[in-house]
Length: 278
Image 1 (spheres, rainbow, N blue to C red):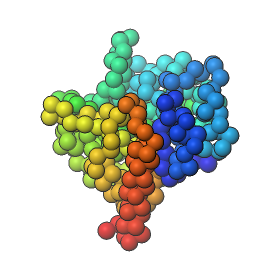
Image 2: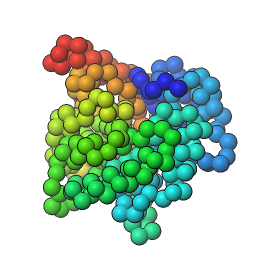
Image 3: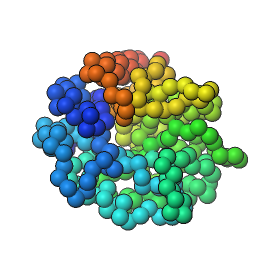
């Protein structure tokens, strides 16, 4: 199956009819936790496979940043689903989700330290050995940072790439959230990812509440993530970008407008890239 390119949309059951008829969606991303690894695939997903639409398998519960190694059962589930879907890659998060058997229910940020990098690198090696397709890891949005962190987000991401062979799922919406919530240097993060390690990009909407920006995946995409997408493309050239929408699903014309806005940002970035990145 061909790798992703162009503009994609996260597959959700509520969006299955839209994806059945949409001609402007170039690839889809499927949440592993929404599928039964032993049961039949949903018919709309089968139809997408038959059409040759590239599929990425996306997980949220592996917890590669946990002190414990990733659970074999979860890795086996991802491997089985990746094979059944014909997925071009599996993506997960630079996060931890459990400790001592207690589930957080959230993607929690990792402390940006050398010790954490070593734990993560070992867990990544175990995951890569168990998966039949390449692994890409996503930067997460957070409402807090750990005290005493020794690295910027850009240096942390560079450290992950230095110690592992994973690709990067760069979420520009999460990056935008962290610039607002923590003063993260977004330009530095964009420069930390070589094109050859960039698997694809996430774009999503959010909202400000109580002085913090929340990455909700349930609101329209603000200008900030689109600006970051354009800047990324201007630096490295064309990249596949996918819209995440997980709740309060809008009508088809709104989804279409969001996808067109992403395409326009990509096109502006490509024009700048061809002109030398100016």
